[in-house]
Amino acid sequence: MMSPTRFRVFDDGRSIYPFTLTRPAIDLRLGALRLWEKIAVVGTARIGLLVNDRIAAVVAERGDTPPVNEPLAEGPTWLLNGRTLYAARFWRTVVESLVELPPHEEYAVRDGDRVILALLGEERARRFSEAVRSGRPPLEALDGIPVGEEAVDWIDWPWDLVRLNAAEIAADWDRLGGQKRSGTVSPAATVYRPEHVRIEGGARVEAGAVLDAREGPIWIGEGAIVHPLAYVQGPVAIGSGSEVMPGARVRQGTSLGPGCLVGGEVEETIFQGWTNKYHDGFVGHSVIGAWGNLGALTTTSDLKNTYGTVRVELPEGIRDTGELKIGCFLGDQVRLGIGTLLTSGAVIGPACNLFGGTLLPKTIPPFAWGGADGIERYDVERFLSTAATAMRRRGATLGPAEQALYRRLAAGNDQ
Image (cartoon, rainbow, N blue to C red; front, side):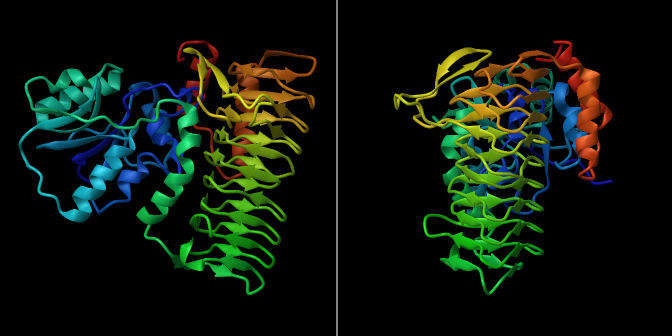
């Protein structure tokens, strides 16, 4: 058994609806990597995650993260807020520049009432950890130590992910080591600016495919496939085991998490992972949760006819994104039937099954079933059966902790 880590990426509990109903914010994908991964890929230090106990068992059960909420190590502990990109840049500077840091003196940096990072001794680290795990503001654990102030950018809203994604693909390409070709590229494929393309082992770029890295880098993960006649326009990140289908157009600013099958046209969109958009249809300026399915010809609007900024309805109220182009935000385990149309700024909660080939309402709560003839409550046990079947087809399991989470959400006890 490995000893506990002294480096923790923590989640401060901020809601980024609808995604944080089923995962902590630091587990969201931005660029090629999830937020916590931006810190983990730097250097050789083993990190752990610190999240609210409400979601900890689910994250641990999924098995694709560092240890979650493990006991603190003896001695000082570094705590880095994964919801700000400042923490990742800070840690890279520390590791790569060998910046001299006080090994034992406690101190922290905050932005107003939000903690950016802290180096804490055992007692304060314990209190900090307890605050995060119980959903209390961790700032209370910093009394009595030097605290600096820094104004930084935060991932506060779902549209922040869309806004920052293209730049973060480029930043992650660099974090991952830059140019590389371990996979195979057909001689009949076209690659513009190959020095800006990174292809991991087992990946394939097939005949007639075009990789266009003239406007930004392209990263293709292990075992991913870019099929014949597909066009990939960087900056783009294609996760391990994902496939860009024949003739697809994956335009700049798009990130595919692992295990996605994507056809048609996508632009400036993040797929968290294990979601299918196999057929034609356009999805733009959107964030798509994990384990979903977008039926043939599913299409999003991402620009209003008035060219005005897009407004989004969230539990906190209606918010003006300040963005001219915003598509949709779909939670985990959302399934859309063929011909589904989504308006600009649409928000759909997790665990929905929607169909009927119609323009859906702009805001749909979790556990919705239906479409053109009306929407009703999706029975949670029926949902769990479908979700388990969909995951089993991809060699995955819907574990007991995640089932329990969805049952709590359906009962309204875990919003």
